[in-house]
Amino acid sequence: MLKEIPGQAVLRGAESAQVPSLSVIIPNHNYAAYVGSAIRSALDIRWREVEVIVVDDGSTDNSLEIINEFADEVTIISQANAGQMPSCVNGFRKSSGDVVIFLDSDDVLHSDVMTEIASVWSNAASKYQFQMRVIDAKGLPTGNVLPQYFSCPASDDIRRWMTTTGAYPTPPGSGNAYPRWFVDRVFGFKSDFVDRAPDSYLLAAAPACGDIVTITKPLADYRVHGLNHGAFLQLDDTRFAREIDLTQRRYKFFAEIASAENLPVTPDALNRNVIFLCLRTASFKLRPDLHPIAEDGSLRIAVDALRAVASPQGFSTSQRISLLGWILCVLISPRYFRRALVSLRYVPAQRPKWLRALLGLFRVIR
Image 1: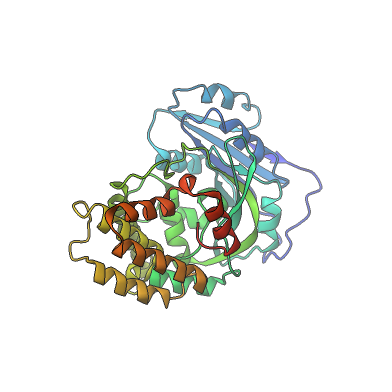
Image 2: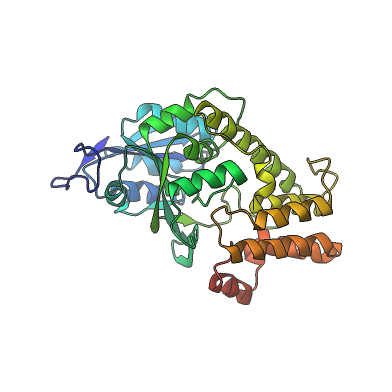
């Protein structure tokens, strides 16, 4: 359903006089504790036309009861459990907005999100990305924001980083807004790549299909509550092999899109990606029996890491050097110490306060 707010100003900086409409699509599965806050935040966006679509994906808690409290204000889709990606596709098919945000049901949008997007509107953009304030389960800010930019990245730089290293600084899914034509393009692209989350497709494809406009201001809240998909509550050394496989398949998908857009891609780009190299290091040293790169070795990883430090990819030099130091320490440390180092890198809850403060002071990747 479209919400109309009278008196909305026309677009600032727009290339068209037409004011775009916004669709917020909220997929939900068993997040009864948070979905109401997500819906309310979408309804509170200050913009002339805001359409909110909530897709309940077979929840077994009381999510649907909470969602139905907003029945007069939102469009509700209730379906058998199919997963996040089908939920987003179904929600998108029901939507009509010129701009689309896929809001995770445990996250929250700020009321000025569309006003800020409108101020930098460009018909050439495939994605608008903005920072996210990190909050805890109760909604209290933790003092962190995602991502931490050392400078505002230009779109041409992002495209070059992605084609040469497979990396660029991007917020989680709820921190991105997409023009409708781009979502149509990606969801309709024929590929063997399959993943549960729409982020994998959209974030990967965006640099190949258009400009990425970065807003260095928090316009959404990212909630950390221990049940987040992707969250490390404790060290799971079997997970790194799966993350490597996903990263490789996702970059292959990007390369396919890039080829269709006549954008050249460096064949071994991921070997210059510091985040991917951290995964390679953890996988190889903790679970060599599961490591998916058969020809890998400590020397090869170290050489690739040295090359990665010299490769711009949206992180500051100090950030890349800090990760190089971590990689080298894990490669040479005894088993007990390497597990501790990997835990400090991937399980934030296990970091002592002094380390969290130090990472924040030097704006090291967290």
